Image (cartoon, rainbow, N blue to C red; front, side, top):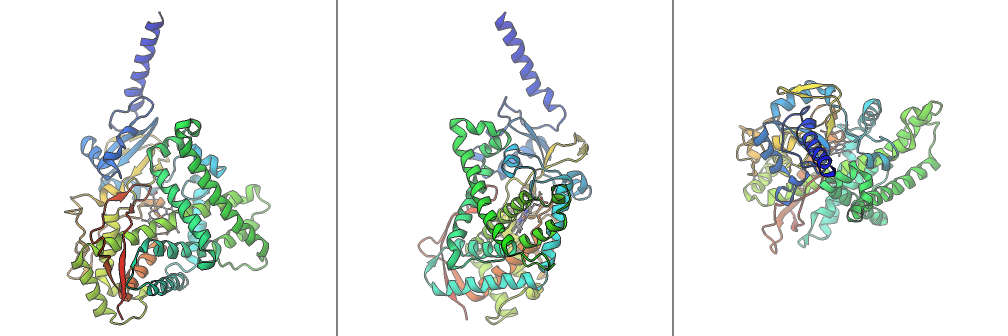
Length: 494
Ligand code: HEM
C-alpha cells in the first residue's frame, strides 16, 4: 500500500514538475526536481555567455530557464527586445523580490530592487538630483577631471615602474561616487575606509552572481544549512558592514545639516532635506531612512565596479592590440597635440577613441546575465504567452556577441563603429541595457569612461609590463565580469 501511494505521489510530482508547471511559459531546458536548470550554470559555461546563446539555438530566442522553482523567461533576440522592452516599456518595469534581499533591506527599498510606485518616485528623485549635480554639464565634469588629474599625478610618481591600474581606477571612480553621495573623496587620510568598502563590494558582486547566491536569495532558510551557511554569512555580513559605514556617514550629515537652506551638495543631503518636507506623512512619504541606506548601497555598488572594470578591460584590449594603440596616439597627436586636459567638448573630434570605448564595452560585455525584471501585465512575445509577474530578462550580453550583428564578434575591432572616419551609431550596442529600467548612471559612466580613457592615453605612453606581455582576457565570473590582474608601464608622453 505504502509503495503504491509513494509511486502515485512520485508520478504526480513529476507530472507537475516536468509538464504542468511549464505549460504557462515558453519552452526551455527540462528542469530537474528542486534544482530546476541551475545545474547548467556549471564551470563549463561560466561566465555564461555561451550558455544563454546555446539555449537560444536550441529553444529559440524566447525560452524559460528555471532557477530552482522560479521560471525566468530569457529574451535574446534584438528585434524582440526592441519591440517589447523599448516600445512597450511599461510592461517590463517590475523587479523580482528575492526574500533575502528584502530581509536585509528591511523592505523592498532602494532603486535597483524596488518596484511599483516606490521605484517610480525614487528613480525620478535620483535622476533629478543627478541632473542638478550637473550631469552632462560642468559640475560633474569638474569632479571627474579633478579625480583624473589626481590619478595622473599619482601615476607620475611611479612612472616606468610596473603598476596595476585596477587600484587607481577603483580609487578614482570610488571617489567620484562617494563625493556624489556623501560629499567627500578618498585620499591617503581615509584610504583604509575605501579599501574596506571596495573589498566588500567585490565580494558581494562575486557571491551574488553564483547560482548558490540565487538559491539563498530565494530561500534564505536554506542558508542555515551547514553547507550553505558560509555563503549566506558572506552576503549578510557584507550588507551589514556596508550599511554600518553608510549609517555613520548619514548620522554625521544629520549633525550638521541646515534645513533652512534648500541647497545641497551631495545626495544624502538632498535626500534628508526632501525627507524633512514629508515628515508629517506616513513613512515620510517614501523617504524613510531604510530607503536612504538602500540607495547608498545601490549607487555605490552599481557606480563603482562597473565603470572601474570597464576601464580596466578597455586598457587591456587596447594594449593587446598594438595597431589600435597606435591609432589612438595618432588621433591624439592630430586632434589634441599637447598635454592639455581633454574634456567632453573634445568628444566629437575623437572618433577613434569613442569607437574604441564602444568596442571595449561590447567586448567586456560586463553583465553576462542582465538584471531580471518582472512583467507588469500579461504579454505575448514571439507567439509565447508570458503571464503578469513573470521574471523576465532582456539578455543584452547575447545581443552584443551576436555574430549576425557584430561579425567576428570575439575580435576586438573598434573600426566596426566607424564609417569614413565618422562614428557609427549601432543601436545594438546596449551595455547600459534598454527601456525604462535602463542604467540610471549611464550619463555619469559615459563621461567617466571618456575623460579617464582619453586623458590617460594623452598623458602617458602605456605598454604592457614585459614580465607578462600577454595577459589573459579570460573573464572572472561575478554579476559583472572582471579581468585578471595585469601590470603596465606608464611613461610621460609630454
Ligand atoms: C560602465 C558602467 C555601467 C554599466 C555597464 C552599467 C550597466 C547597467 C545595467 C546593464 C543595468 C541593468 C538595467 C536593466 O535592468 O536592464 C544597470 C542598472 C542600474 N545602474 Fe548601471 N551601469 C554602469 C554604471 C552605473 C553608474 C555609474 C551608476 C550610478 C552612479 C549606475 C546605477 C545604476 C542603477 C541605480 C541601476 C538600476 C536602475 C533601475 O532599476 O531603475 N550604473 N546598469
